[in-house]
Image (cartoon, rainbow, N blue to C red; front, side, top):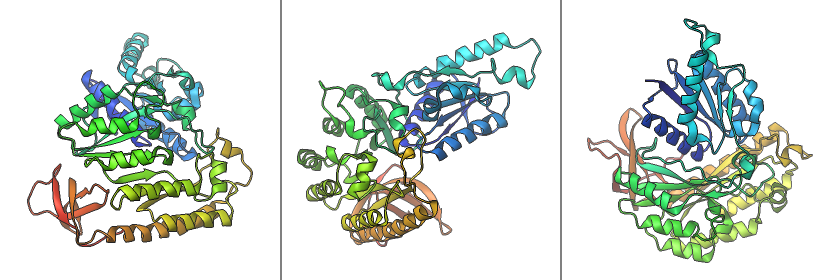
Length: 448
């Protein structure tokens, strides 16, 4: 029995695909082991969203080969797709598997192992003999920018024991000026609703009570299948599945939140009032250079629309500081916008120059120390906004889906999340709470 180890880098979509690849190999008799010395095969699902992600991907590939020089090292995912055939010259890599080829992994491995055994000299167990079939990695790539096929990976369990991430679409048509993802993931491709519902039913039968819908550009779900309904109809269909108590959305764009969308979803009690709206900047001038498809005022109107239909919804967002040419005035506009909206949580990212994107070639690149200073300003604002949001719920009874037992200040505790994604911790009194939804009264906030 071959021992295979996985390492995932990047987003929730990558994590889902890593789970799916692992389950494909388990079904073929492979033994999944920790990412440590001793595995026969190492599979790294790479990320390429930033130059740092590229570097981490390379580091993990080389680490795998160092842990066992005779093992088969497989590079999969976005970094592979971005670098293409050039990556085949890296002697740490034996097999390259691009996006939309991951379902073929069992067959790819079987063929490679057979070929390696055929080419191995009798009794020759040298490192050179077993490290690769030849000097160039076996490559399985397709032109991701011209495929219309959705790669139908699926899972029957996930790494998280109570919450299941469900990938419903792939690709992106937005071409934000800082982003490489449309080039590594291709155009929008939506999964068939019937396949999604079948997977959710399987997960519900396995005891999962919460599903999180995710994708590379979730808001675009269904636009490539004009004969079918879009994201709102998908949510309504999942809402009818017995056993599912919560439906949470991944990141969505402001344009998808129409009055009909907000009003309809507000009528679904299983839909979590937690919306991640990706802002990136509160300055219209910066948004335009980013090639974002809205103004700050349009974004604000979306937030107000959600607050009109939902009771104190948790609004979270992403912001990039130090985008090329971002002036002090533009940064001040972003800060003022965050103070105005009062998000529950704001994820702050310093702009990372990504080769292959229009923004990387822009004049007016911002100094790293300026990015760091602006980041600190917004991080402090985020702490204040988080605490103010959470304080609204002190003394109220909320439903918590408990997920795991942890140790806190020397005491065993259970921790979980409310529908608004407030993290709640309670002392362990000997009850098994994992996977249960319980009523709790919030006593105090604890902002890390």
